[in-house]
Length: 156
Image (tube, rainbow, N blue to C red):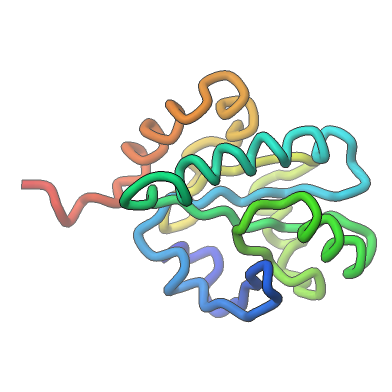
């Protein structure tokens, strides 16, 4: 489980609360810092949607990958509109959760969009997820998976 979200509640696109311990267990997690008012975010989000759909929804079994959207929108309504209109079927930290400020500090977020790929313990695999997806497409997931060490229980 990604320890970085321990004790927090996440949302899915239906507005239901999700337990991060269950949703993020044994997965590579992309923490997506983004905002609807940001043109580069609105440019990258559809690319991220395609990446996520191919990995998680069109692969059997689904890839061990999840995204958590952390909003930099100015209001809760702005976040909800951007999340519903443009984002994939991934999770989000509620806009009202001030933990987003701590996350931005921890991962040194100075501008959006930023996609930080993390291990289960919250350690950074790469803070260049956006560039890697643009440059390498689905191929970058394999290197993230190898770095995440989530298969350690299955090594012979």
